[in-house]
Amino acid sequence: MMFDSEFYRDIDMVSVYLWAFTLFFIGLIFYLRREDRREGYPLEKDTDGKLEDQGVIWYPPKKTFTLPHNRGTVTVPHGKRDERKHALKRSAVWPGAPYLPTGDPMRDAVGPASYAEREDVPDLTNDGRNRIVPLRVDGHIYVAESSPNPVGMTVYGGDGAPAGEVVDVWVDRAEAVIRYLEVKLGGDGEAAHVLAPIPFVLISKKRNRVDVEAIFAKHFAGVPKTKSPDSITRLEEDMIAGYYAGGKLYATPSRTEPLA
Image 1 (cartoon, helix red, strand yellow):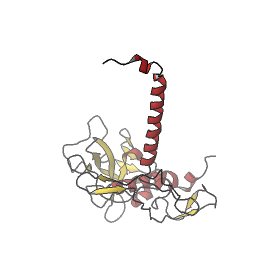
Image 2 (cartoon, helix red, strand yellow; image 1 turned 45 degrees about the horizontal axis):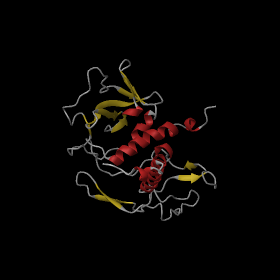
Image 3 (cartoon, helix red, strand yellow; image 1 turned 90 degrees about the vertical axis):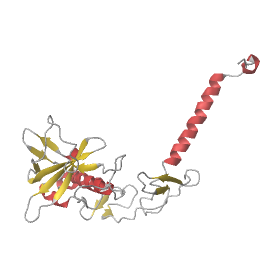
Image 4 (cartoon, helix red, strand yellow; image 1 turned 180 degrees about the horizontal axis):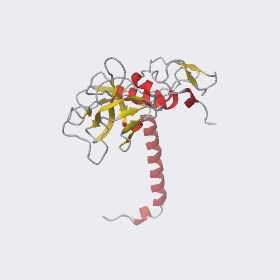
């Protein structure tokens, strides 16, 4: 195809491309900044909890998403607020002042123990099976012989005291990795079973033990339980992870103090 050279002779194509890219980039930023406001907005003012004015330009139009596995649809933004009442008090009146817990921070979802209110249903694989299950549910999955098998090992808390014994391993069918250790607690009466997220544990084959530095032995009894003995919901995952994360700061008062 032939072009009239006189038509392009006075056009700086470099400038054309530069302006085209600039306009595209500005449009992309505008699009992304609107899309990221579908959840978590409008923001609340730190001092009085009132909603901030988001304006018309940056507020995205509603969009409906179809959830997988016939779980319905969700429309965002929906304008709903987190109505949970947290056991906290402000340490000062100015914006940005830290909040201080007034109850049990490890169970009250504050600070590092906070969690999102995800769906209270199990996460599923592409074929509709529960994604995270104990080994006793899926006989096709096992711990490799080259890796230490924690089943039967004693679990010790961050205070060095024994908390219980590992009785099973919970695996992620989709990613073929260990997600939790199931710990049978000691003590009188019927023994309770709790889950310990694998990022918070240290398995020692040489010492034949499992160490959990995040919480102490006495705290294992307070780990949020699952409704089902063989499955875990998305909400329960966040609650359990939040409990252990909260222990990194709140397991003992000395952890909330400066190092020096």
